[in-house]
Image (tube, rainbow, N blue to C red):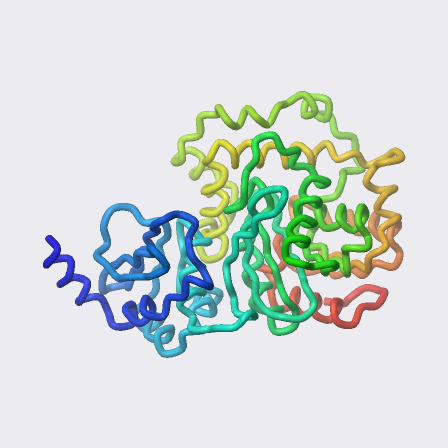
Length: 400
């Protein structure tokens, strides 16, 4: 058996061996003792890269693999010739990463051949509130990126790639999501998440940072800016989840509903996966497919499911009015802010822009022809606007 394995290993294409030989555990090392990533070469075959003890080795494809990376032979050849091109091929859609984006992209980053503190790297940061999984790259002023409900740090990979030449970008998994800790008794409300981001900043030695947040992450960035203005630089808010100003008929029921029910809910993967893929257009392709995989990876665990329900519940019952209501507090926000709205966003209506303009007359606004995730749907325009705003802010509306 060992001899057969050795023979098949030798048959693995040269470019896969080159990737394994470049593996740098200082850039990415999985939390588990051993991890297996399946490398698929279309029309040729499949082999596994086993990560163990700070090393990577090619072996036969056997059993289950944590992540699956697929590409055509020509794509693998390009990555072998230019080791920094793996993530570019992924962003361009010529290479797919499924099942576990954290593991798959981590391996690509660790085989890129890059070195130095500004390289793309995966780091588990142990804070006073628990472990927070991060992707970090670049140098300069710090920029912390916060994902939306059900998302992960992976939704900001395009942002990390585009802005790392200008900023030190840190994309984080919020507690309860992705690869971060999932404490069962946490509140999972905006204030809790804001404290978690502050704990991350403290551990990284960041006195102050710019913040970019999508959906729930936008609400968290606003909360941090309102509660700790001295720690927040400029805010970029991508379709932020804001408190509804309309009557919410289910508020009383939602206040009584316990998210801990997610711990005992029966959730067969085929059923959940079928529902998610029906609801989300294009869920079998590119970034969307990888994002769905990340959502399922957390949601199908009891603790991740409870965190998802708790966070969704707090979005719904977020109090809009009154002395401590969201909208009166928003008017006190001191940080310079850029709001990016999706003209086809079904979750956060663009009509919210009018209410924000009333509360924050000095805020900047940008409307894009996209849905709820501008940094993925319109990456070039979104990131150019972010860069312009963060480097030379001013009042007014940005024209598309």
